[in-house]
Image (cartoon, rainbow, N blue to C red; front, side, top):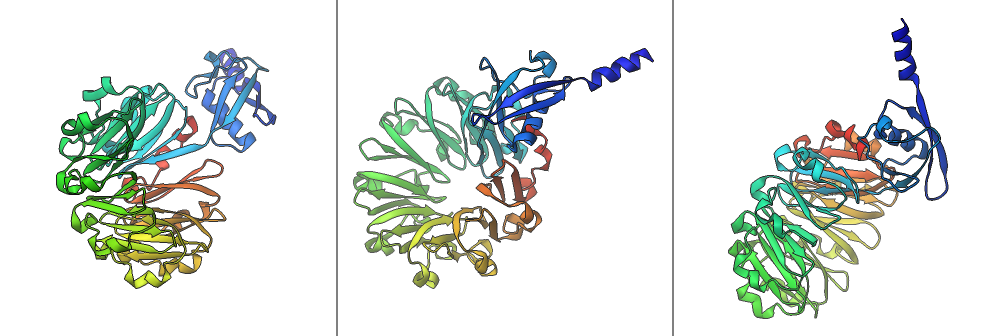
Length: 456
């Protein structure tokens, strides 16, 4: 009986802490002293209405959500600081990764062997600064500029072969099957499938003073400080640029489809190479490619916005390379987004024009009256999702692959950003809530990690 009373007393005991935001807003938080720092974060989240908070003691010590309160050293009446964090979502073709910059934990879901399971490296993921996805793997840059990878070992998930070279990493880019990292000295380290960008030994001595790297599905293209370009990977899919090498001068930007590249030069003209049927041959429209401001790629086609707001397209006609049916509507275009087989353009008045494969997002007639005041569009392989000015979302395309968001439509309010895998979408709301839809296998169902999100 006495023992039962003591147990009840222990279970009922609590600790009160003063938690304050940088704004000065302060709340008294009461939690069970048998709980964890995560329980404290959950209580603070409810009080402040903020999902992602970093908690620190008065002397600046950051608290780990997995630690128990009893071992944290916190005493009743202690003062803590809370900083609201903006969550970020990275994605590859098969999985999502949710994290906060500087955080000590990430949450992954989707296909486990393709990046959806990060448990093998979870204890290494400290002070994450950026996460990049290849087709079937992820690579994270830490605060010390080292790199941690997971997912399909053959496609970039295993960087052990080059781990000792991955120091002072500034930027990471992926193809469908490989990863490339730019170091602080402008050199490059690659890993993954050798013939699809993972082996850059053929051009390694040329990879000096690299400023940017762009990946297609099968190759990489690097812009050097002098505006020249170095390519590697599958030769006929963009990895070989010798045919146009003398034209690749003063390159400002490179964009890739799955099998080709397009470069914008300083004079705003365009140079293309790679598979001709996937956008590598722009000769049909070359005389129209003047004053190009932006280029967007789908799987097998390109779309370029000119200075006057008109659009020029080339590549596979059936998947976006031919915009003739909507050409007279493509005026005052501000942004273009590609799905796998279609394009969506946002006009100056916030309306949207689509073309390409109808079932894959090229036909938006079902939702056209809803597409008003569109701010941003995100494209998966077979569908689109548009964020409107009021923070709501409109989707169209293949219903099973993200084109139908009706299951979660009432949750999609105050959406701040949307990311996508091949067949699913994930949205972050203003309060930090994560909402997912689309093919469950590809990350469209995040229910399995819902509780874990509290520990970020």
